Picture 1 (cartoon, rainbow, N blue to C red):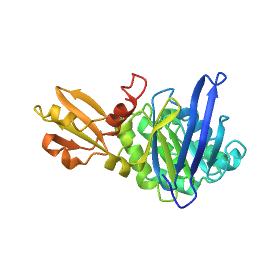
Picture 2 (cartoon, rainbow, N blue to C red; picture 1 turned 180 degrees about the vertical axis):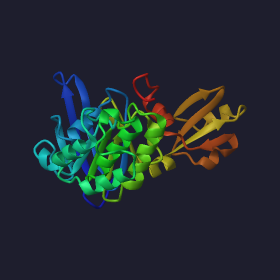
Picture 3 (tube, rainbow, N blue to C red; picture 1 turned 180 degrees about the horizontal axis):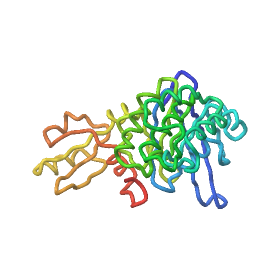
Picture 4 (cartoon, rainbow, N blue to C red; picture 1 turned 90 degrees about the vertical axis):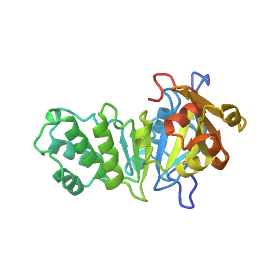
Amino acid sequence: MNSATQAIIKANDLSRHYQRGRIKALDGIQLDIAPGRIVGLIGPNGSGKTTALKSILGLTPYKGELQVLGLDPSTQRDQLMERVCFIADVAVLPRWAKVSQMIDITQGLHPRFSREKCMAYLAQSNVRLDAKIGNLSRGMVVQLHLALVMAIDADLLVLDEPTLGLDLLFRKKFYENLLNDYFNEHRTILITTHQAEEIEHILTDLIFIKNGQLVLDASMEDIAARYVELEVKSDQLAAAKEHHPIAERVVMGRHILLFQDKNPSLLHSLGDVRQPSIADLFVALMGQPNQESLT
């Protein structure tokens, strides 16, 4: 993820250890995230992704080198947060507040918030300014949160499980609005989520993290060129395995093999060739997830 322009997030040997080094939440991470990218950071619980986010936001100490928007999060957090918007859960807004009060609160908290833009977004929704958030439907809460977010002129938007607890319709709408109405070539979005398939179509880059280390860090174009999946014909399994797959799974009796750096033309006669999904690639590269990892 290199760029001739200044990296939005640049880390060298980023580490965070607990219990006198026995637990390595981050273990020598290298990152170079360019402007105008949408990056998915995916890993099982306890993999280090939350610690990585906290380090980027200046919320936890770390060792190594880390710059975010050219600033040191550990010593320049106040300056950094003027250019960063962080959202942990779009479904969590103070239920006691009215919509108008939430706009006032956001304006007071973030110097790059535009009331005018927020009001323009809300004018396209059914959300009333005098409505109490606790009385809004879930869909209206999503519309309100989106209006608040998209009215902040942030250089970096960090989303940590942003659609947790929302149903499929609202999750889809959230990402569509984010992509169509907010993202541009100057902004960078970093997303962590367990719902990998839902963000697959919007990502420009993908990072897998496990046990504090990066297992994958590549653009979606590089991943498409590097990995290929083969659903093997019933009588071609032995021949397919001669091409040395890096992973295999069986679905309803059909063998599906994953290959790395293999010319797809060599595999077409052996079955159906396709691109693996993020979830399938995750399982192949990081091992079978448990119930708390990737769903």
